Image 1 (cartoon, rainbow, N blue to C red):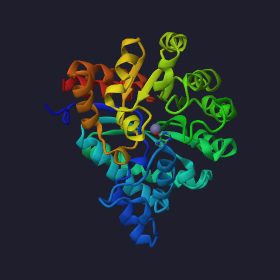
Image 2 (image 1 turned 30 degrees about the vertical axis):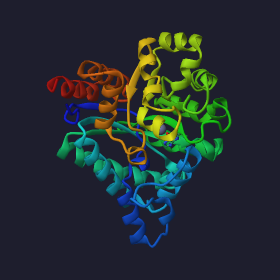
Image 3 (image 1 turned 90 degrees about the horizontal axis):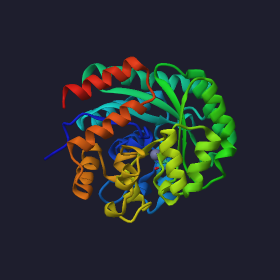
Length: 329
Ligand code: HPA
Ligand code: ZN
């Protein structure tokens, strides 16, 4: 059975991290930028472990020099996601890679991304929303600039604020100002935590940043009291099993805690994170969950429903997603 055509809702995805290596290599060639060292012999992204992953990721962003490049990137990633049945996608977009945190430049990048999104919605029926994302290891001042970009453009398309990057760099409270700004602008909040940091990082992220969703969060399972608190608060976990296996956050699919998380009553969703970096897509995520945990259409429908309910979108958009999920099941 292939799950490719089943409609899917994906809520943890990085726009730059979804760039096909061929696309980045082609742009680099056009611009005379030499980033040949980030590709392996098969033309995929080369890295070993999370530190190198972040370095390769940042190098891969260097040919993305302007709005037009993000327009083309958005076209490419939405065509790819739609191929795998994704009807609604939330992607993380970093002002750091889109104008360096300058609000005027950011607006131009965003206009290009929104243009490509509107075209893909019309042509392929996939809806995109953007979550402005700070990069943790770029430090709190830069996160505040990202938050400023987010507050200036909060609306129908930019609906959330979050943070990725090197999770063990500083503590969540060091970034509270950025998250406070975003919250006051009406944005919904998520943050990577418990991918590399332990349960305490998840606890502090919920407490000090006031997020309703956690990116990854797999190490929540180290602390039963925190599990109970997260269940009680209805925190949603954006789980990316293929990413965790590929980066070594878990030792393999069999060791992945997603089934235990679900059984403990936590709200879990499934996403790809940075698909080409991890040689994955939503079809592969569903297929491996089926092979590993025997999850099937009923389980995947539940994941979709949780993701739809947790989506950072307005109710009219949510109703549209529900219709697309309902029609095809
Ligand atoms: N973790 C943290 N930061 C990231 C990731 C990730 O998996 N992908 C892109 N930035
Ligand atoms: Zn991520």
